[in-house]
Image (cartoon, rainbow, N blue to C red; front, top):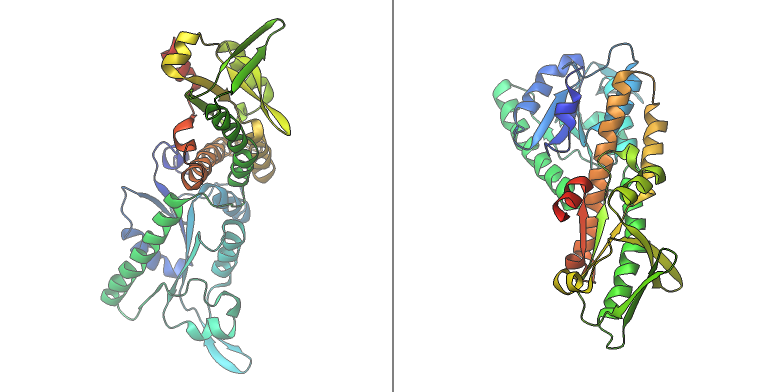
Length: 359
């Protein structure tokens, strides 16, 4: 298998695309790949050493639905078959199966069909369930010049859709990061910020912070600046309570509670002097351990421990989950009616570097 770490790292920020086809239509698949630019996309065709040896194709494909951002299935007419008394061109069953697998696990916005334009009768008569999903992306396979021209036009349409879907918002997919991020935003980030903002606009607003056994802090919060910094783990395996406690100790943070009725919310604070608060505003921290659910889901899907390759893939999928969590939070902030959150919420993924710079 190719160097998956280099190809799938979210640090590279390229969109990863898988192209599936029959052996007979590999030439078409390569034509399609040639129309993607390398600046924005990593594109792999199924025959390019992406399948892990010693595993079934199904196990490999299931992992691909977690690793790749999008899939394109090439539908090219195979032998003619008789269906309900009519002759119709068919598509190789394995390509249909693979498309169904990607469609079911990734969704319609991430699974594309690029079809030869003479298979309409097959789709209408045999594969009618997919009509209207994505058959607008078709090409003319009657000659090489026509195929090159029409696959280029089809890929241009697909590229635009991929860029739009990838950059505009995080989708709730097979893995749970986007759903977790939305729940975390609605039930924690939004409510904590709302409480702090209301105190900031109340002339009598007092912030009381109790921490430790005998220590407390109380001062007017009227017109005070504040920021909630969300600290993400570098790797998803660190999204657990033991890792959190280690970070709290390492960075000298204390646990406090913000009273945002009907319940209090725990956050962390690196105790600031009144002079520091006057200069920088209050700075609070949170570590969203909700990502632990993503890590457990990845283990279930990828069956951790089967091989070194599995462990590497698990780490990469975890990296994508963290990135998708950030995308979803940023999207919720960007589209929130509470515009003050755009200034009061910050997300960081390198806590060590951040706190080192504070020293």
